[in-house]
Length: 492
Image 1 (spheres, rainbow, N blue to C red):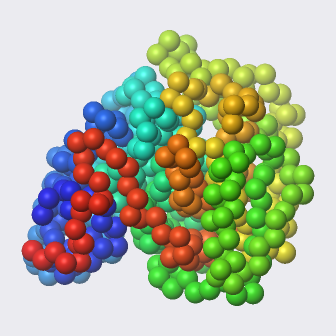
Image 2: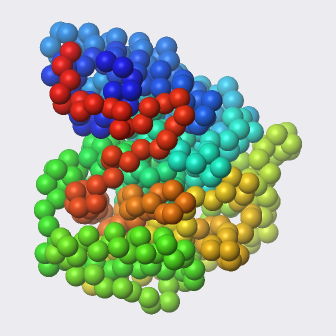
């Protein structure tokens, strides 16, 4: 079976085909590696391709199938890992020349759990240096463009992971999200990206467990695959204070049997601290949100004067970056990304009082957002205010919407994402359609704290009502999904 036939198969189908011996782990892994190699000159989505390691694991996986062993839920399925997340024996560079040759001795908890479920890691995806911006470019590897238009950005900081999902390079992709870094590139590339509730997926590399606002999470093409990853990666671990004591949820059941929304009340928030959104993006996302009314919910538009928390998110985040990475500047400054240097330099002006005030404001924001769910079951927003930005932009450039300069990128391109990094609420982005420029537009679903299953359930229902998996980008040299046969009809 050729790589073309496997490229866009969901992980749920691949795992079932392995269990039924209709396709082999070796064949799936070889197919993924061939497609990654073919795509690199065009998309540059991987920093490191773990070819030898993946094939060794695939051979072991094939032997397990041949012996009739009990197989894990992801047995033989390829996955990629953003290069901020530690991987045993495969370098983790954080997109930085400083760590170009850093090879961890252990896997991150999320990676270890995916491996334990039988998944096979094929490589490390691109990220800007230390994941500091929504542009996936860095001195170490260059630039990763958008899967749909090479003159637009992939988003970030999990840009390589989102492009890998969109281009059929791996069905399962591990990203991280500190201000929208899973949801931004997933939205820009027309795929699914979820930031679960704080602690649902343990993050053992977070330097501050108690004050964490950084998350590990799935980027996939389907909601079912996101649920599959979430099921494998979630659960308590002593390294993450927020993960302890959390009851397990059945995300697979939530995705498979979403039910309806009769009697549910949903808030539609087209603005979230911003004043401007592209009119076409607004029309597409509002139209997509009406799918929930079709499923029986009542939808209410809300505009309560919400004020963007981005200024105090920036204080918390830049102070953390300066504390963690500022010591490298003297030796490595001339080889680091200028926008990252500017970000940690800005942090030197923050006082202890400003930092503590930001911590207090985070608590107040949590209370405000959690209060929304006293009236509403879910909250819907656009994910981005416009489609993917032009490739000649960077972090400190102003956003242009419909020919109008509207201000800084964090507040005006993705105002909908970082509030929920601060509050910890679960949020998922889903493809909602395409704008006239041919680029994806996305809808975000936010749920009550610790009710990740409710978000998965709503996402799966939306996917049934507004399916998107048949749309794939035009990738010169790589076939699109319209050329792929129905895998359920293929026997080997």
